[in-house]
Amino acid sequence: MGLLENIFKRPRNTENVKGYFKMLNGYTPAFTTYDGGLYEMEITRAAIHAFATHCSKLQPEMQGNAYKTLGKRLQTKANPWMDTTKFLYRTATILAVDNNAFIIPITDDTGEIITGYYPIRPSRTEILQDNAGKPWLRYTFSNGQKAAIEFERVGIMNQYQLDNDIFGESNNALNPTLQLISTHNQGIIEGVKQSATIRFMARLANVYKPEDIAKERKRFTEENLSTDNNSGVLMFDNKYADVKQIDSKPFVVDADQMKAIQSNVFNYFGCNEDILQNKFNEDTWGAYYEGKIEPFAIQLSLVMSNMTYTERELAQGNKIMWTANRLQYASNKTKLEIVTQLFDRGFLTHNQGREIFNMSSIQDGDKYFIRLEYGEIGSKKEGDIDDNER
Image (cartoon, rainbow, N blue to C red; front, side, top):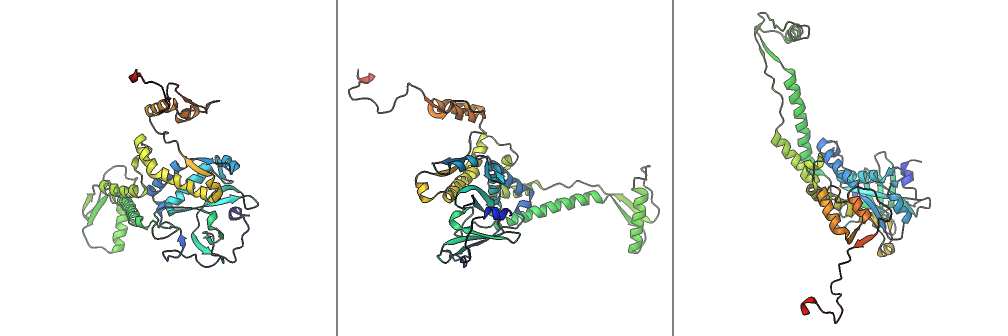
């Protein structure tokens, strides 16, 4: 039994699943994985890696009484093959590369109880329907294997969604920038090769055949330019009108052009150089969190809640939330001010305050405290006299 059978192990009757599910826009409900080399470019991979790395630090919180065991397991493992950080990293990477990410529930032997989640990356995805009109997702993987699952049981994350009712758009808008990056890198390689290869230029005094020129070039190089010439003296006879040394200058990358290419990538992936090189401060991190990490966390929370719980369970307050300590990269001064102001007002416990400073929790540290001189607004009883009324 392989990985596919372990993921899609619930017995299903898929014989009646045929015919495309009709979309409002008339598009064929199919999605093909992007294969344009987006993850093969150094700068685009760095941007995707930074995004996925920060997403992998999200923490799961399961609210409600349903799936208590799953909530505890999700703290460390999302499925038998991945811990929680790997699950988040791979999900974020797939979403950034393909603009679509599919999360499949892992179930027990009965096929009913969810025990984990797995992010898959099929080469092709189609939305079909059975005889009752119920939508199904049929996946085709790069090794040729296929699997189908009910649409309602799958979590679908996407971005750049416009024409398709279900799937996000491709990354074709980035193709011109990818071509520029490729051409730019090739130009650098060829420039370095050329600047490091040609050292001397010699003009022969007479006319020679091409094969004679090749032989003479080889002889001249071996006798004068090889390591065997320890004298440092260049000697040549009257076959040559003159021999000149070429002043080799190092190849320099056009800084403005490179900056423009980087700006295109940064704009597309919503990051900057400080994020990629881990030089960010609390303001830069706050902007990146709100623009990239928080939308991912919100969408993942909704997707996994909807695929895990029934309508009744959702109405009872059951949900999965992915959260992050937004103060992790704040300065110590900011952390101290926040803890000082919020602890004695009952917003933070001892352990929550210690967590902000990356300190371990303590026993009985989950209690809330409030300063006793505070009173509720409007709590004055009838007949009480204010100081101004005396």
